[in-house]
Amino acid sequence: MIAWPCAAAGQNARMDPDQALPLLGGLTPAQFMRRHWQKKPLLVRQALPGVEPPLARAALFALAAGDAVESRLVVRHGRGARAWTLRHGPLPRRALPPLRQPGWTLLVQGLDLHLQAAHELLQRFAFVPAARLDDLMLSWASDGGGVGPHLDSYDVFLIQVQGRRRWRIGRCRDAELVAGVPLKILRRFEPEQEWVVEPGDLLYLPPRWAHDGTAVGECMTASVGFRAPTPGELVRELLGRIAESVETADGERPYADPHQPASATPAEVPPALQAWAAAAVARALRDPLVLPRALGEVLSEPKPHVWFDTGAAGTAGAGVELDRRTRMLYDMQHVFINGESYRATGRDARLLRRLADRRRLDARAVGTASAAVRAALAEWAEAGWLHAAGKATG
Ligand SMILES: [Mn+2]
Image 1 (spheres, helix red, strand yellow):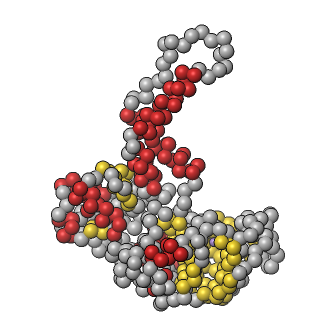
Image 2 (image 1 turned 120 degrees about the vertical axis):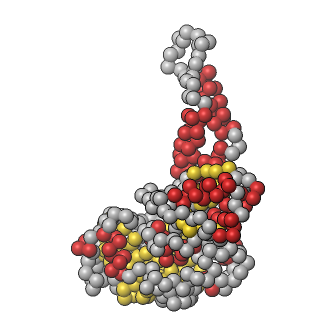
Image 3 (image 1 turned 60 degrees about the vertical axis):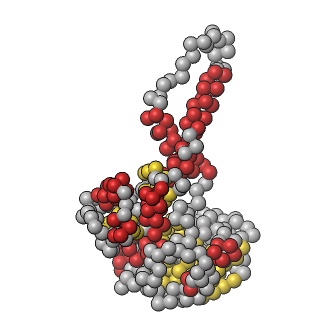
């Protein structure tokens, strides 16, 4: 049943930006990124011919009943503009309407963390940097189901995996929302284009394109989602990380003011304290590697509620493969894995970058690794962050 037709072809191979892909309707990833990414929509008929849902309806419903995944139920009651209800999971089966009741949708987030097939589908989009890739969501809808016309702040690839869905899309001229509903539904939506998609079809939408998808009979749609940090989120996380390293580095000596004169204006912040604060912040950022290191650690941090199976079998003599939950990134000085950073240079760095890009190393490559790299691989295997190749849990 788990049979993305993509599982074999090109899996874990190096992504060639100049190779035309059926997935992109014959465009190369380079052309797609230039012409469409963050710019304009693209509909590809039969991008993934023969595609099958990564799991059956009953299994999706069962997953939504547990608290391991983030799930939502959206129900439309009749035609009224405000007749929508939203419920967050866990969603036991009895919380879901009958299958024959039209107009409802179940959405399950982060399927790539739970299912190898979903992870592999997400990896088809590795022509976008991993730091930007977020997750694979799967939605099931009864006839007429959808979440209403809306905008997203992120790019999305919508893959029809079962049944048919009518998509209507348009530029957003008016972002005003319908008041008094638990969903963000556009008050005025003027579709410019409309398609009925079938299994295997793919629709790419840039951020802030209005869209409305309605199931034509029951259907399933997979969404490849992206992440784009806002300055507020990112600065908070970066400065939090940097603060931790400052605390351990200089033992936190408090401000001292042996030359403070007696004050006639006690409410005034002492200029010496202002200067000291500015110097402390500048000192924390003085090392030019501090910021890129914190960034890599933040970007490679696993999502909340991600747990690895520790103490797995050793990888001696075998190739290695990253666990599907592992986030591994690098920059010119570091390798980052699941929120931790390592300095790596020369041959070690080349090998670890290859592991990060392709998510696997063959036995020969592991055999040439230095003692330091082999020790790191053993530690990561013990932590459940990688496995002997071919033994990835499915
Ligand atoms: Mn959307």
